[in-house]
Image 1 (cartoon, rainbow, N blue to C red):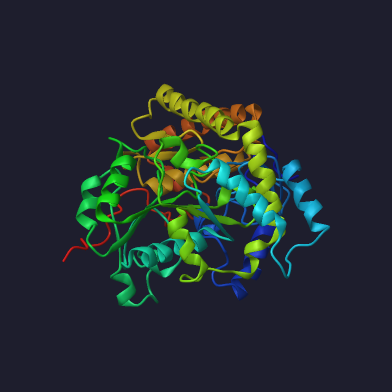
Image 2: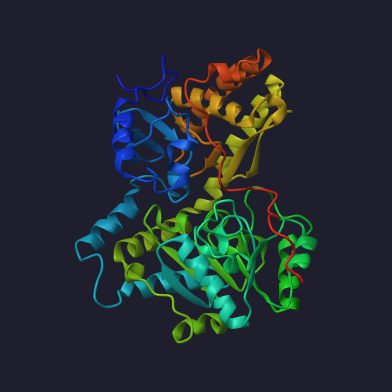
Length: 446
């Protein structure tokens, strides 16, 4: 019998997952299309590798095992799997067609809706992925300012201008690498040190998990304006979660350009670039940014339905409320068990992170042990709580019950120095996305 959401007697059988994986290894390089979904982020030998279906906040793997999901598609499932109003909008549009030879009316409908709710959305462009719009934002910023250099902080996709500052930058010309640099979040001095007369834009995630301190975002905007540099918010994670209008609404800081994807279409592939009209008008003639599938109507229909639902149901408030119960509950359990000095839940309520201090042992092995034991109990977990509107009180209560038992097991394993020995598979790999220490390049000034 496949495992359920329960304190199962054994770990899930993943025979079919492993069969698919062996087939994939023969022809796919690598086997995953999204790094965070790949086998390196799960205990190899215990965790499922392939999913079959989802409903609400639960998924079923190809072997029939059921899990409460706290990854939620690595972000896009803000409402939940198979959410009725969104699915109904997709099905209705499917009957009329998907991609057309002319512009579709939903392009205007969505843009008008976005214009009303996002503070800086004087003008709007629609595309398919987050990397599309962050790269378009950088390109139009360079065109508008007549400058070349970029300062960034966070994760911004796979394109050359950003990946050049990471460790996986092979295949990118040296001349491109010299145009991008990074700065430390909440350190305005690191921004000032990086800015010069050729800096076209500063792009950052308004927050990852750490909150802005000392009016950092307002200070950042002022510094950019003084230098003639455009400020770009990468709101892939913050947009439509912390507030419907994103971090710029929540913090009261309006960037020149902002980029969105993930949350606002509940799993359908679509992205937005919003910004000042005087900057965005360069897309009319001077800057090229077009894609065949930018007006694909199923995603447009899903986006309109999702945003309306977020507004009507005040989804960001729900994500914060339920996420706060999880975060506080986890920290209370860690405190009761006397292990709060090496593990805690941090971040904003809508998307929090479990941390493990090195004093507990190898953090990747510790994380792997917790993940392994949660999977046994029917919880799919990668160290995050990516909250959705479908996570119920029952889901959260069960998760906290599981945390209480798993953290007790972890405490005992650490005391006996047995964490690595108790792993039933290969531990998880380091996450490619960095959450701190963003200064990876020398200062730009010459």
